[in-house]
Image 1 (spheres, helix red, strand yellow):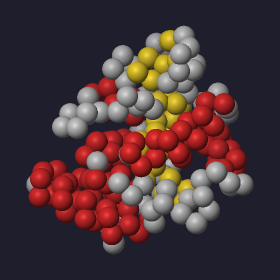
Image 2 (cartoon, helix red, strand yellow):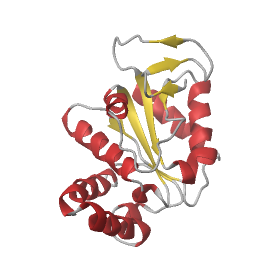
Image 3 (cartoon, one colour):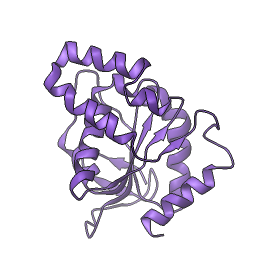
Amino acid sequence: MAVDAATMTRTSSETGSTTNDTSGPLFDVFLSFRGLDTRLNITDTLYYALLDEGIHVCIDKKGIDVGDEIGPEIYQAIDDSKVCIPIFSTGYASSRRCLCELEHMMKRRRTHGPEVMPIFYDVEPSVVKLETGAYRDAVTQHKRERGDETVQDWEEALKEVTKIKGWDTKNTGYVNSSTPSSIFSLFLLLEY
């Protein structure tokens, strides 16, 4: 199912019929990812695997223009999802949009929101936790551009999400024998 975030409709396929049925969560899964890093590999692989199993997926197929802010429809899509899957890649933390999505996911999770199931794609959880490397550098750059107060919530979300058991693809690859069990775990969570 593809989602046009601007109209918040869902389709059974990218060109299928639409529905605005809002009884219960609108989406089973919300995918958060850095398009430049993962759109044409793990994100598409996971997206189509979930679709093949009948899981309703919210994914931004259009992207966002440089300099644009996240619209309320993205936050609403997170709120309307049973499970959120941030796909952490090398460049995820350099994206303000990704960090805003993650911050919202984690705030919602603390209250009554969706489950969060992180995927660590070619990045170690310790990097996401800001202990070393690219994420720490990206957060430092955001502080220079945005100020400490804004970035503090992003740092907390990054550290908090690493406490959740996620899928680490660093040493196993993302298309392998463990992929079906990962999707099976998601089915159990979604009660399929």
